[in-house]
Image (tube, rainbow, N blue to C red; front, side, top):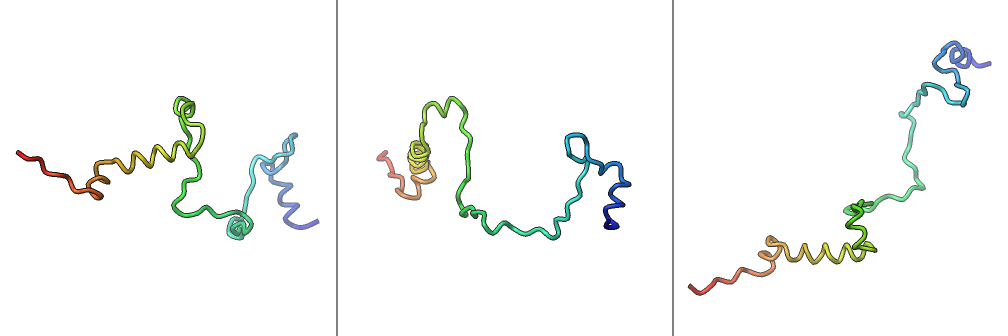
Length: 91
């Protein structure tokens, strides 16, 4: 038997419960490494957005939402000022 195993048995908090789970686990994260097989999210992309149910009833795909958002973005007053100079009215 390893010396650490005997120490663990003396610690009552580390005893498994009837469901097989211990009340406390100690993990050594200093030895952890990133998962090299996991896909990396692309920068500048949002992974997910949750729509409220009433909004989700109107939009059935992300393409529909993106199309509307793009039209709103291009028509924002600050964006319009960048693209087209405001015309002066004749007084």
